[in-house]
Every structure is written in C-alpha cells, then in structure tokens.
Image (cartoon, rainbow, N blue to C red; front, side, top):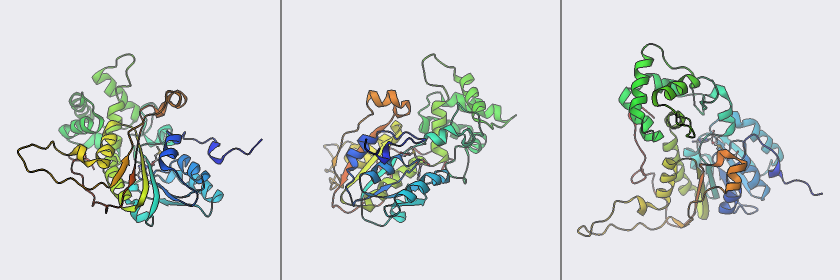
Amino acid sequence: MGKPEASDQPGPHVPVLLAEVLDALAPLPGARILDGTFGAGGYSRAILAAGASVIAIDRDPSVLPHADRLRAEFPDRFAFSSGTFSDLDRLAEAPVDGVVLDIGVSSMQIDQADRGFSFMNDGPLDMRMTPEGVSAADLVNTLDEADLADLLYLFGEERKSRRIAHGIAAARATRPFQSTTELARFIERSIGRKPGDAHPATRSFQALRIAVNGELDQLVEGLFAAERLLAEGGRLVVVTFHSLEDRIVKRFFDPEKGAPTQSRHLPQLKTEPLRWEPVRKARKPSAEEVARNPRSRSSTIRSAVRTAVPARATNYEGLGVPRVRGAA
Ligand SMILES: C[S@@+](CC[C@H](N)C(=O)[O-])C[C@H]1O[C@@H](n2cnc3c(N)ncnc32)[C@H](O)[C@@H]1O
C-alpha cells in the first residue's frame, strides 16, 4: 500500500472547498503561492503536496504550532509570517503565482470557548483574532444605541437590529454584558426563536465579529494587495462565508458590476481595462461536502487570473462596503 498523501492527514480544521481551491489555484511544482489565512494549514499542506512553495500568513498567534509542523516537514518550501493579509504585499516578495484567502474563523477559533466567537459555548464576549484591540464586549457595552443597531443591521443583515440594540442599551445600564451565552440568550428573548431557523443570535454574532476584526476592510485591502503582488497569469482564489464578503469579491473582480447604471443622456463612462481575466463563476460546495462538513454550507469560492494591466491603488468605491460609526 502506498504512503498516504500529506494532505490526507487529519487536522483540527477541515478545509472547505479544498478540491475547488486547488483546481482554481493550479499550483505547479516550483510555483510560489501565498496562503493569506493559514489556520490549521489545510490549504498550505495540499499546495505543498502538489510541489509548490508556500508563504503563509495568519493574524492569530494560536496557529503557530501548525506552522511549526509544516516548517519542520518542508524546510525549503514553507515560510510563515504573523500578520494580516491586508499587508500581504509587504509580507511577501513580488511576484507570486497564486494567492488564496479563506476568509472567516477557523473551527479551532469557534471551538475554543475562551475566544468568545460562539454563542453555543460559554466564554468571555471577546471575538478578537489577535490579542489587542477592542473586544465584542467593548462594542456591546459602549456603542451608542443607534450605532449598535446600524452595526447589527449592516454587518449582520439583522432585520430586528433596532429592537435588539434598544434592549441591550437598557439592560447594560444596570449590568454590562460579559459572556457569549448571556448575550445570545438575551437576543433570543428579545426577538424570539422560530423552530427550524438558525439561532436568533447568529446574525448579531457575525456582525460583532466583523466589526471587532475589521473584516471587511481587511478583505478589501487584501484583494488590492493581491492585485499588486501577483504575476501576470497568477491566480487569486477567495473563499467567503456570507453575502457581504461575497459581494465585495464579485465587484472587485468585475468593477463594471458595481458601477452605477449608465444613462444614455450622459457621456459614456470610460471602460476600465481588465485586471482580471478570465473571472470564474462563483461556486458552492457539493451536497456531499456539506453533509461531511456542515461548516462548509455557507461557503462560496470565486477566482480569477491576473492580467498584465497595472494594479490599481486600493479603492473602496463601488464595492458596497457598509460603514458604521464607532466601529473599526
Ligand atoms: C477559515 S480559517 C483558514 C483555514 C485554512 N484554510 C485551513 O485549511 O486550515 C481562517 C484563518 O484566517 C485567519 N485570518 C482571518 N482574518 C485574517 C486576516 N485579516 N489576516 C490574516 N489572517 C486572518 C484566522 O485567524 C484563521 O486562522
């Protein structure tokens, strides 16, 4: 019997859409690929197994043991930097042949109750991916009621945001919110729960996590940084987990989609030269993958190939990034 592939080894985080990521990235032996969201190294390991080199980045120091393991196995082809992928063009030397971003939280982060990401596990209301910065408790206990409602609505697409924010503002006056389950139960009491629906705190927790970690800004900056870093013909592959992020990626690859509709009474807008061509259609995980790994359910993959047209400076226009007062 042959030796199992390195990528077959079990890990604490089951990589999502791995076959689709490898297909889109097409890592050849000798290629240099940047993995901007290392996590437990599932993608990195598979890319290394294909013969390419990997430069990995993660902002969460708790992934270091996983990085150490890969460094020991692939000393000549694997390098790791602690940092954010918004800085990926400063953390790696240009040009690279591929960039992959698997946006969001890892299973390890969700499963560690003391990180405060999950309303299912009791822990401090934290949600920071790095040890510094404001926590979810800081936002819940100090944001102006209207700003908190905007945050829940814009980052969580929570339609009952005003009711939740109003209740929180009244309750925290006597006792600040400290724990995940305390907030989750409070939201459930405020807006009720329908059988069969997701937990009523799901959207609010997503919103707080996005705000605490500046996730939408990270994504925009990371995409433009990848545009600067990739060689002509290089591939950018992005896996997202909710519609706000997916919309940003879609519009980034195809800016004309985000542009206002042109009026025939106005002079024609200049059409931008294409920085990404071809752009593949979005894909979702197979039913088999969702059955095997329910956390993959909401994932979407988009990918595109870099052309020779010079990179743009970072520009938020047309990407549909919501802004919330008081949140990063
Ligand atoms: C979904 S997990 C990645 C899992 C990985 N693809 C694997 O197969 O193990 C996302 C990881 O990205 C990291 N992360 C999230 N936002 C980041 C950012 N802006 N910069 C760097 N790392 C980030 C998180 O700390 C987490 O470890």
